[in-house]
Length: 166
Length: 357
Image (cartoon, rainbow over all chains, first blue to last red; front, side):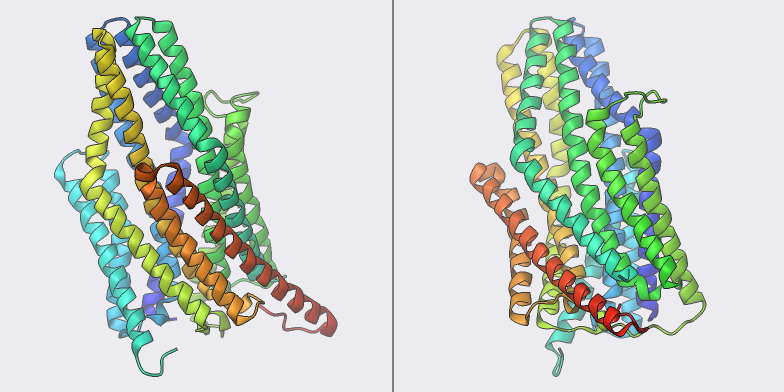
């Protein structure tokens, strides 16, 4: 098995395990508390509105916003790590259909792997900092994935269009 | 039956069940559930307007119950399909796992047990609740689901170890006709799958760049508008915010669903491309079913995206597209079963070694 395929398959399975482990940890230790926090704070804001208590309403809404922001991203991170891991494994299995030199295929595989790790990591970092850096990390990661996938698709087409292919 | 075919048939069965469940859920539960959530949210806002704190809390309790019902159904659908995908991938990787066939078979059975346990457990969360649970926030159904997830995680890790042993031992790659297959239907599915994945990626990137943060900000501002409108006794502001909130939730849901489904169906098409030589149907029918699967896979996310503009017409078409995918997948599954039956029968006849993969 070539180095590029090995990189994608081993990297993909390792990332899938990491993503599932993260999801399991989240489901057991954090998700129920997060959902209680989201529901409780939203209900609290409306209850404060019924009490005509603007300060309580604002505090509860702010708590809801932060809890929902973090929850959405943590679920996204779990889904994207596993989804991208599956893409890496599947591409790794079919990577012999990409008609480029092994060196270029290693570069594409490395781009896919780095992007698949970094993109959800950037999303996760947004739960720690609301600044531009985590967003930049997520954008960089997704750019790596899309560019490498486009490169791989070009490699598949190159094979199909070459004489005698098929 | 070999471990590979066990993973393959079990994986497709998981995907089929997950999709069928998703279609039933979309037709009979999703919209009704969304209407109930909206109605209870509106009732909570009206109660806040009337200054009735108890009614607010009661309505939010209802919202929580409806959202939990919806969330567990979506999770059942998603996890069933994703574990099916993982099973297909492990099926493809079987020749590279440095274990004996009997260990591989045991791993396949344990994996499938966990892969069924998690979604069934998640489905039951809403109905079992915290009944007889030893824990404060997690019920027995959740515990069963988490245990199922742990089983899948451990088996996947063991499979990774098997691959690691294979590569460390520098064993020669076994000849695998599946990966060498370049049939027309296989190429159709592989190329179509990559196109669908790319389409999903571009849509996700576009949505993240243009709408995602705006939608998050609107979500908060509309809820703030609702509660301030209620506190100030402004019924018109409240109604406007409620209507906007419903529209916003719809827009978010269709964008996320279109993105996710396009990529998932792309992955499915790529994986099925490898297994076409196992599908015991004539070539023309294999090509037809591959085309049906790709058409359904493209039509579904596009129609889901159009639901905000064309309503139930687009929603109905999306459901039909889902059925097309289910039919195509079912046809391939039957083709693989026919192959399996023939292979097992021939092994029994000869009673010799060299069972097919």
